[in-house]
Length: 71
Image (tube, rainbow, N blue to C red):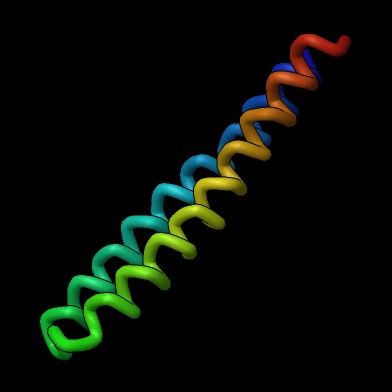
């Protein structure tokens, strides 16, 4: 039972990643609307930030899988 609770808590990192990516996308859209000439640099930073945020969700999912199947 405690393994399932630990796995559920580990998977909750996906919520944080989803909120972070959504917030970053909204702010980058605002920035591009304000300065269209800087869209290349803004997009580059957005993709890097989204990749890092998504990596945290993948790590949480991996930990959840390990908790379930290793015990």
